[in-house]
Image (cartoon, rainbow, N blue to C red; front, side, top):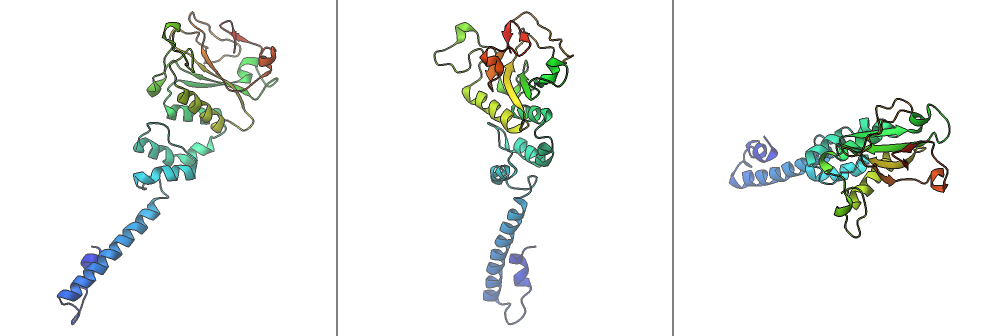
Length: 235
């Protein structure tokens, strides 16, 4: 029972008349409204209990942004896991998890030692490999006859905003010392990358080369090779 119902019943003579009960009920309703606001304010710091219209504000506090078309329930779940998410920030698993939350299914982070067999030149470099299952994002291969003038992601149907979102996710959640070189997209029938990665053993299938979104300049951009070639193209 709230104050609106309790206050009139708690009155004693001579205050328990019609006017006194009306005043007590009105003041009780105001008390109930204020308590409701206080309860809501207290819940706003808790992802599991805050109202839906507080999720985005809470997300900014936790630095967990909402991804495009993400429902309140899904976003609430990610905010509930904010502390666990930040515990693995700066690791390959942290980047992979965020890209999967964004909508990808198949995501791999390949680090430089996977190619070179251990520490050495370019230790900080890594490559993000997406596909062939692109999940809810619906990205597919774009062939020459489907290209349109002004297309910004030739080779795939990804939109410019999707490319920007992926790069922002990688740069935010990668380690501060990491150097993400490329994002590679592979499709069914493309040159698959043997991503169970036994050192130095990429499996090249017949098909097109992966779509590449450059992330950072490397020595390879000045004609020095990275030490391996994928499908006839420098990765």
